[in-house]
Amino acid sequence: MRWGLIGASNIAGEWMVGALRAVGDEPVAVVSGSLDRARAFAQQHGLAHAFAREDALDALGLDAVYVSSTNERHEASVLHAAAQGWHVLCEKPLATTLGAAQRMVRACAQAGVVMGTNHHLRHNAAHRRMRELLAQGRLGRLVAARVHHAVYLRPVLQGWRIDNPAAGGGVVLDIAVHNADSLGFVLGEYPVQVQAQVSSTGMARGLEDHAMSLWRYASGLTAFTHQAFTTPHARTGIEIHGTEGTLEGDGILNQRADGSLLLRSAAGVEPQALDRANLYERCLQQFHAAVRGEPNTLADGLAGQRSLAVALAVLESARRGAPVDVDYG
Ligand code: NDP
Image (cartoon, rainbow, N blue to C red; front, side, top):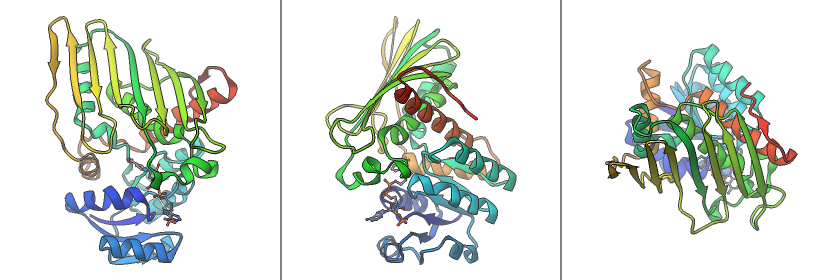
């Protein structure tokens, strides 16, 4: 597939250009708000074209675009892609409002193009194995989940995320969306109600850089999620607790395919074998399967809409100081 990149971003350069080539695709052009930055990106990554306007892509015979600009700019790019008949992989959070995400999902559905959300974590083998073990009933009745996703935001990323609410900054839109998607993928459900507290712990200005929340699910399960930008030594992980067993996924919320997974039960401790497939390449392989109309585990546009809905409810709960029902639109 021939791809256009919308956004001369860190994630595009660090991970997605290489992943596209690794799965046999061709990134052919980049669009940036600054022509100089687009040209520098194209030169650094060996792309044939660099533009400062998205409509310059229209003549290139593209199959798909990857949207990784700041969050408030995703909507216009996805709507343009749908109008051109391009498939689109959009970064998370899909947008900064639920209405925008709904318009994006609707436009892609009406145009008959595949819309994916780059929730890469569900492509970690631990997530897939957790889902399988739950489907096999190995944990019995599910009781609780704990998601530890407190990290350190690298200095190179300490820009709009920590000082620009209009761009969708803040740790909740950045990380809680991943947690909602990971649990949605593993558990097969999304929370109906959330209760949250957020704080600024020394990095963000006018935004939260730390958040803890409790999520209540229709099945009766409760999840605790912790996300932060300011905890360089914390480990990431997901635990799922049931009446017959516990799953402990340690170090499984990273960009690299790291981590381990243990099943604890009356039978003892069973380490789970995990493959180390690159998460972004696997996302693109699942994107290809979706384009071919085959079964796939891609986080589609609706998954991105749902994860955004949860994050927006977390922010609203923190603002109100009260539990909030999640509005999925
Ligand atoms: P960046 O800050 O690197 O890039 C976002 C935009 O900021 C770019 O499109 C670019 O705009 C602008 N920009 C980049 N560098 C500069 C600069 N030096 N000066 C001025 N503007 C600059 O963001 P990220 O790559 O961290 O994130 C992009 C998107 O990807 C976000 O939606 C984020 O949430 C998501 N993301 C997803 C990850 C995942 O694993 N799924 C991981 C990291 C991010 P322009 O294009 O106009 O040049």
